[in-house]
Image 1 (tube, rainbow, N blue to C red):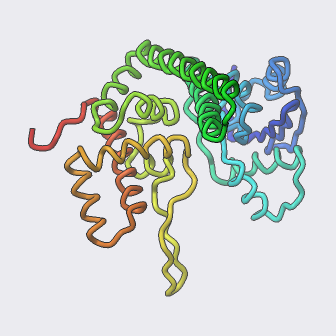
Image 2 (image 1 turned 45 degrees about the horizontal axis):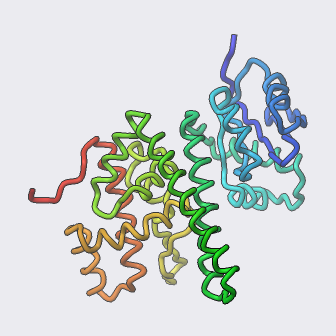
Amino acid sequence: MTMMTDDSIGIDISKGFLDAHRLSDGGTACFPNSPAGFRALSAWLGKDIPARVVFEATGPYHRHFERTLSRQLPLVKVNPLQARRFAQACGTRVKTDAVDARMLASFGNALALEPDQPLDDKQYELRELFSARGVLIKDRTRLINRLQTQTLALVRRQTKARIEQLTRQLKALQQDINRKLQDCPSRARANAILRSIPGIGEVAAATILIEMPEVGTLGKKKAASLTGLAPMTQQSGKWRGKASIQGGRKQLRDALYMPVLVAVKHNPDMCTKYQSMIKQGKPQKVALTAIMRKLIELANTLVKADREWVQNGT
């Protein structure tokens, strides 16, 4: 019989290996970062499921691990910087895979971290498509910039041909992303709600649904925090520093920049707020960041309420 225990497991993930540490008895083990290693890890954990299995986000190295085990184990993905600061606060200067695994287990236990919500296969597919799209955009931007300095006709023709090819590939990726969003009724509905908000178009709506699948389930402060748009107060004694934003999901925040420029022109409420902040002497960047926060909070609220945007007074 499978039982849940109040235990924390730390997993340090590298390209080739998974270093595991069990907090309750100090047990350690190392497994290959492969399907066979995942099965061996599950066997090592036994029938009693721990309260949490903590690991750091490590780009491509953690994705297969997360996708395979997210529905079998209570996984908790943490920010590497936060985990490192916790280790330093504990006085741990040494950094090895085994030490990192132990500190991750302690980190999860000390903060009683709650397991992440498991993602479905479609969400992983959407993330992979979105990641591929980002790579193509960078490649196309690089080639467009290079074209400005090229003088030889042959070189320019080849660069233009490559730009056209990347443009076609980007269109195909976006079409596949849109198709997968429409295949799921809940995502299709959320997409329609997001697209109803002035400024949020095809790409921005898809970015929100892919980078923040929690949209519609969060409180206002949490939505702003996940996006990295919640201002962080800085003060000590009588000293008062300027509040600033930091952290959060950068790709999501970047995707909101163009929509917010449209919102301050075509959404009356946000236009009024923006103009008020400018008249108060707020820098344009600060005002736009504040509107960006209102935009993601509005998106979260509308999806939660299952209603599309309508202009006030209509």
